[in-house]
Image (tube, rainbow, N blue to C red; front, side):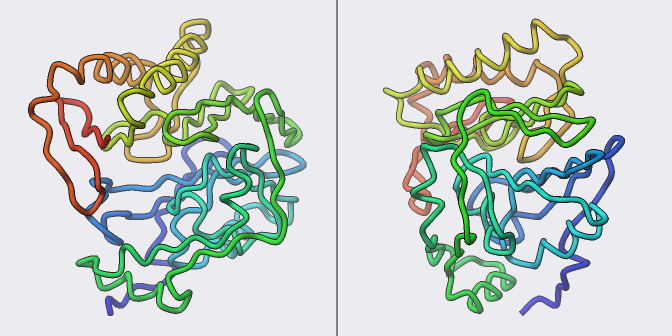
Length: 268
């Protein structure tokens, strides 16, 4: 097994005042997801801190977070319930997730489908029997809920499409955490008949950015601190999928169609 330790696994950086990014290499777990980075965000307010997603659960995340928040109370929020966003949920007493995905987050998640990954580090999941466990308590949230961290607040924006309970979070400092709703690289989309759902969510975020040019986007994968043109390119790309549909290829591992343009890999 690859000799990697907790301190070597996470890439940690303070990207602006009291905003930290904790990154994992998803491609080092399984390259078949077409994704390099998982971005976990930690915002430290005067009174409380907020952790946005808990990553892949391969190595212990809690000790790293506790060191960074220096004794403050912690709020843990999942942008949705996919394995690379809820992997370390069981390290925390409670988490918040959209009400549409509470049931899923309450159940252990079987990730045995990555057992045959080409990366030896995946063997570490054997200690968990390839199951990601839920936390002790799960709190449902919905559109408009606000988290007060003291001098910093976060507002929940329901942005379904990638999953039924996908959310984005907007801070009063104009930081927009988009989860998997929008990012460069591999975009996991719903079935074609449900494209209007994801397009509506993207338009909702774009309108927010148009009304406030100071907003910067912090996606949960790949590049971060990007501008609204990510949303514009993604909306244009999804609307153009019908025109490149004949170029699609079947991915047996993901059980999905794969299409590409100059900005994104679409997984449908």
